[in-house]
Length: 299
Image (cartoon, rainbow, N blue to C red; front, side):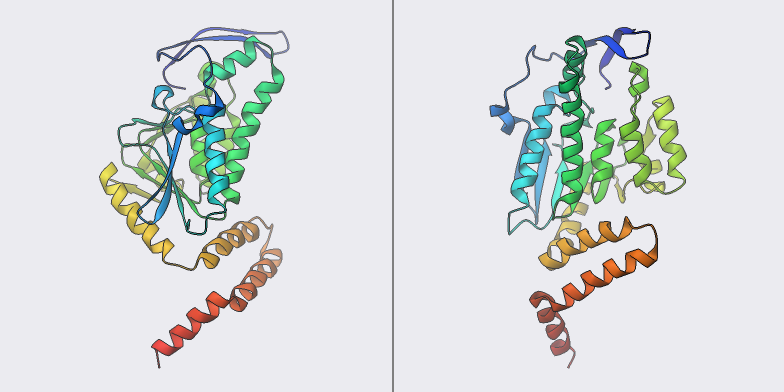
């Protein structure tokens, strides 16, 4: 949301948002780009043992517009059917100073001005679809972060299975500056942090202040902090190579089991689920071959 200046904010007597006008500092087009140009919003390619989903809408600082989010979902759906895709990295080009600036305020403003509640809901629903797709994706997904990660973009990082960032990466939820209770990003952020991070998530929601990469790491929001973008690429290549060398069946079922059992209220209900996955794995041909190879190697 950085890059916008609030000009006017009117509310009805019951507190609902009636009209909100922003003055964009960037030169956006006056109409939304057609879905036929989805390829310009994201790129999807095989790079160094992983498939990379690149947010590539520099003109809007990778705002999570309906078009960009739709493009990302489309790529993930195709990837779920790809035999050679073991892991996915969500990233931005090196020259982008913003990973993503969150929801597209221009589209949100149009919904408010037109009193189009259905389209407003659609914006949030399609963003939810992306977050659910990330967690339900068979392949593990890593967010590769650098620059500014704002509002709903924090949700992408939180929904990912792992997150890596550069030391100069910052995270923020500035919605209240515009009168928007950005509770969705705050909830996702708090859920992905350790227990001490819940209060930090509340602080980010209420103040709009940024937190550093170091603080995000301290509270479990990211797995690793790299000194530079180039160092992060080296680290990711090594990480993806390690993961991709493992059994595809083991990777995908392991991810599914991890979330299914961790969502259980206690160990009594979690252990039976984990046991079923273990039995399934032991009976799988790939697992049996690897176990036999292990014994043959150690004869």
